[in-house]
Length: 372
Image (cartoon, rainbow, N blue to C red; front, side, top):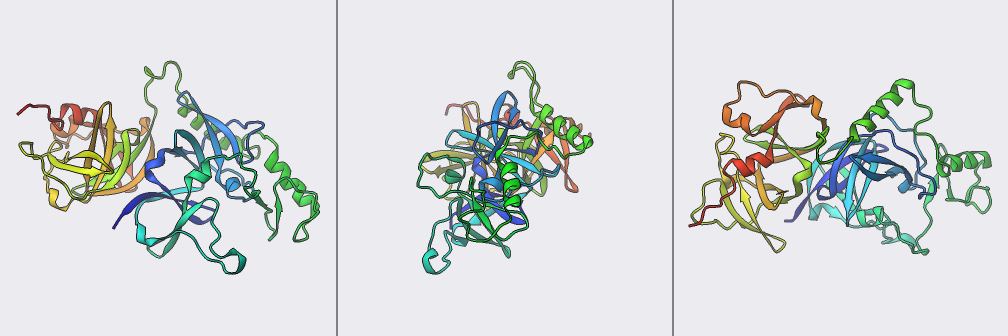
């Protein structure tokens, strides 16, 4: 049974999901710069460590009215077919593995709408009593010049009616709508504005501080890393953080072929869509007991020219962390552990150990370079 990991987030009280393999970073919404002549739902741009990224308002992309931004909003950086964009969402929840059989590709509404494809949804997933709408990134992110695509509806707040984008004079509408309301809504949607004009001075200061933290000064290669996006995983009941930058994708472990004459830390090879992927167990390096028989999930990481799958017990979440929040490594941890840790941080009510994965893989004896 094929399963895929999805990052689950909330938008307008509804649950949405996006494939984790396309997620590059997650952080709280910073101040961004509005852009003139951009598409309606591209509300601005941010400076992410020297790279200018467009910012998409998911509400506007899905056809809803613009809403005031809050300090609790987040931005998810998505990379799809070489294009990167930051998408504004209300709240990032967790990572869930969803089996293919739990996904309904489309719904039938009866009449002329029977089997009508959704514009931005790839399907609907049943998950623990909830219905999660899975986004179709190809249609969500790609802007096609095809003029046959239907216009995006703009929903007026507080009214159960709509107006086609750009048609706000109150004529040829299916329902009667107060022209003044439509004109005000269109102004909010179509004119570039100052970021969060109604925010308090304290809120503006926090938004600005976040933007400053995302921006690296001077040479990017020599600048210290300020922000971390971490994948939270479980090994033997303990929580660890892995830098999302080196994560290529998540996968299920299946049909592993043992490799003769290799240390116990080498689990074996598996076929990943035609690519031979070597699976490793880092628990021995961390002085933890290892039992590879029960492992079912792996994180595929790419560091320099090295691509390996790291076996884990569970993938819990993707979190955003400022490097300043990293605490020193407790003295209770043995010296072997301390060498491969960057520090510790709080995750909910637990402490996670942030791995220095580059050092662990290159210096910890995980890579086997002996010739037999």
